[in-house]
Every structure is written in structure tokens, then in C-alpha cells.
Figure 1 (tube, rainbow, N blue to C red):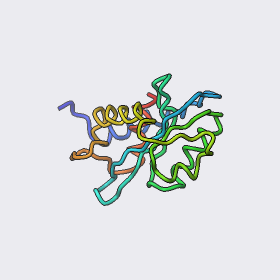
Figure 2 (cartoon, rainbow, N blue to C red; figure 1 turned 135 degrees about the horizontal axis):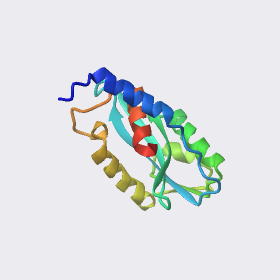
Figure 3 (cartoon, one colour; figure 1 turned 60 degrees about the vertical axis):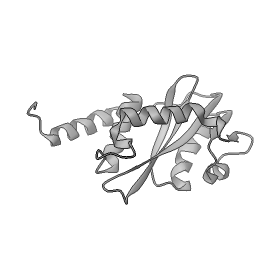
Length: 154
């Protein structure tokens, strides 16, 4: 319609995301909610997870990681949060969290993550590549991460 090639659009998205740096997490935050979203890259057999930390007092996504739903993927996110001196981290009942977060800073349960679960629905509505039943998806994890950088911090 506009006469712009798909490759040009993809290149522009990558360039824009490359200019956005990961914001510093403010020191001594009161609490964060951490959760993950499921999507796929390339085809439906290639599952990928987006784990992210949400600060409900500032209504801001503080940090995120894209990868498999493994302890090592979540460790990268949790370690950055712990280095910021956060007082409490609220999560769902995924067992990886209890192994990564010290007990005095961790709170887990169904009602602890109401705000981030609502944020999940908003993100899925805004970014169709994260919708569960869709034909829109990312072909590469790099592109998914670029779109998330622009959405969260751009």
C-alpha cells in the first residue's frame, strides 16, 4: 500500500530497538511482580517464553528476558532485580522462582500477581505476536526482543 518493502520495515525495527538501552532499575524498590508469557518463534513447536518484572507503583516494565522456560533464563532476570535491592518479589507458583529468590524477599501465590496478570492481557492485546491463537508471530527471537524493547521502553 505504501510501497515500503518488508525488509526495510524489519531493518528499521531492529535499528530503533538497537538505540533503546535497557533502563537502570531504581535502587531499593519496594516490590516487583514477575511473570512469564508463552509464545513461539518460527513455528508452534519452537516455544519461547518472555519473563518480565513489573513495578505496579510506577506502572512500568523494569526488565525482561526472552528464552526457554528454564532456571538459567529466569536467573538472568532475577539476579538483576536482586542487585537493585528490591524488598519483595511476587511470583506465581512456578518452582524455579523459589530456588532463585531468597525466602525473605519472595512471596508466591495466586493473588500476589493480579497486576502483572492484567498486564499480560494488555500486552497480548497490543502485540498480536504474543496472542495465543493467531497467525501473527515472530520468525526470529531477535525480532521478538526488538519489538518488546520498543513496546516496553520506546
